[in-house]
Amino acid sequence: MEEGGFTSGDHAIGGDGGSDVRSSVDGPQIITTVQVTVTVDDPISAADDAARIADRFGGSVADRSERAGAGNDQGSAQLTLRIPSASLTKALEELKELGVARETTINSTDVTAQSQDLAARITALRTSVDRLLDLLSKASSTDNLLAIETALSERQANLESLESQKRNLDSQVQLSTVNIYLVSERDTPAETPDTFWSGLEAGWGAFVAFWSAVLVALGVLAPWLLAAGIITAIVLVWVKLVRRRNAALKS
Image 1 (cartoon, rainbow, N blue to C red):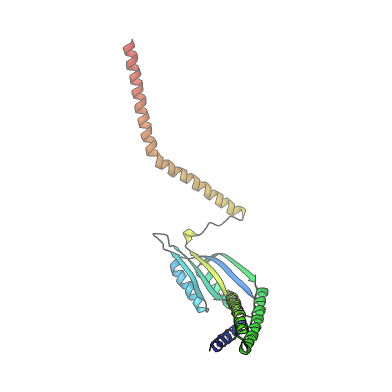
Image 2 (cartoon, rainbow, N blue to C red; image 1 turned 180 degrees about the vertical axis):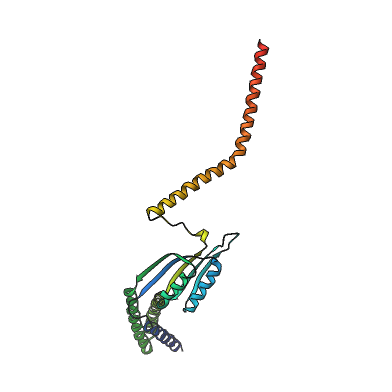
């Protein structure tokens, strides 16, 4: 009874894992990660649209966070999308059309060698498991049976670990990761001047902003300065009167 249950489980692992390796993506194995920032009128509503775009291309939302707006602030949203790599270009175009794309970064990592190495190690371990299963069915003593079962359990654990790594790697290759940041206009970082005229415009804007801030500060301080001036004048007059009185008394 023990041998029958053990053998059945081992064959199941070998069969399922084999289909996983054969279903791996052919050709170069590339993991693509995209970072994109888009300025939109309503970040929360745009986040719903981004989720629908991912779903339409066969993808999904892996993570989503939102910051609610208040007053004129429309808030912001951040989503992590998993989109089939074959549809990434078209999906990215639609995501950018949600508003004004401010910044896009695409990183690609070639994991072909790592994928091939995992596949080779999985194949070798499956061959070893099959041989141990054959020896297990022919074991003639309890000592041999226990030794074979110990070796088989170790190889099965290693095989399951490698198959899990392979599935995770294949998933990253087949589904690209898109981190999209949706912000309102007021949250958009200022653009860096890259020409003389844009630099002049930025400098003039800073100049005007500085003196505007100075005038505002003076406006805030004016009542306090006026009050301080009046108090100072009163104190000076009082001091002068006291000195005159003291001088009159002495004379």
